[in-house]
Length: 133
Image 1 (cartoon, helix red, strand yellow):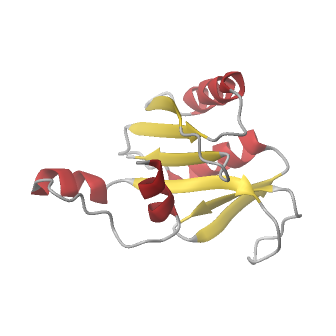
Image 2: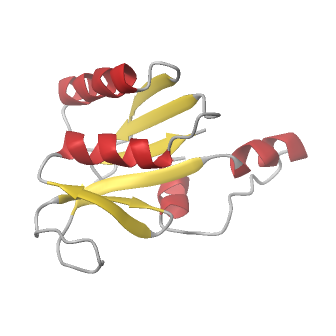
Image 3: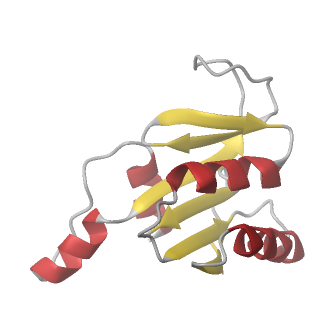
């Protein structure tokens, strides 16, 4: 599933679940995904330094910060809409569980009307993959 989220966050076509009925595919269309990773070069009108953490949503860099947590929070704020109910954070191989749990608590404080879930994603490059639905 993490690979699928990465593809969606990179601007891939809408997710279609093979073998799923139309209600599952309808639910997948309501899923917004993004990622936070370390920036290596300037490839966006948004200014950032190499090593900053960048937030990518819908194929575009939407935020950058020297702090992973700030980048995640900024990206979640960009993604979340009033009708959304669940924010899911998948933390990568380079993130310690206690760091991810602290970030989950911070996101929950800022989005008290939504459930904030945390899962070990283990992805090697993105520090976090984020879904909002």
